[in-house]
Image (tube, rainbow, N blue to C red; front, top):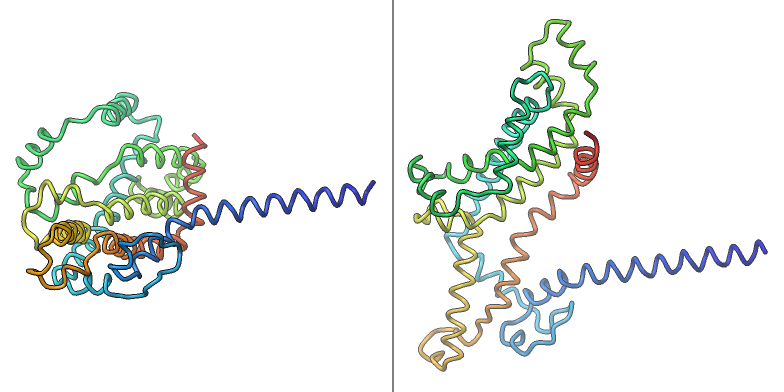
Length: 297
């Protein structure tokens, strides 16, 4: 009887491991396929049928991206935007959430209702553009930062986390003469590393991947982020590919080796690498902060 039970447990464990391996394979396949296409020669890519290993290995697709001179300045703008935007958003959201987490704040329920309204109703694209223009943020680097300082969803997560902290910690600090600012910056923020890492990751990914605001509010290439430059590069390659397919390739240099799919996959891989490299360092805090900030309250 014991032997049969032990064999049954081994069988169940084996089924679980097989299922998890299959799930991991299904999850990883799209990324490996994208990487293989980005490393595959353009003319061979047009034939299709590429799996997770490139048939004709080449770095030409990445070379086309690197040779774009405007890419480096755009990368600097993106990094600057991500750093300043993430730091500013975390600080502003934390301050806002900390205030709304206190029951003694007068009008707290009214403030929360006003915040929730903004989650369900948007002013619209044209009114938002007119507002940004009235604030003189058109063609300004700060159009990336100021409108995105506070997210109501992130504020609710941080507010829930702050309400889960023991009140005795703040009360003891105030008895010792600490002001509200001292309590917030020297006590609350240091012990809130999990939720701060969570919100920082949310904002970092948002700022790194964002391109729509630049497409609407920015016309000068010197302050466009890398996502906008890469999007322009993909569009130009698609245009060149359409011309080549139409039979005009003889009039244009190297048009016959352009394949927009290979270049698209190369740009995708190039843009997700920084986030993939940062995520493992924040994974522990991210999971803990998300669970606590979403469940406790």
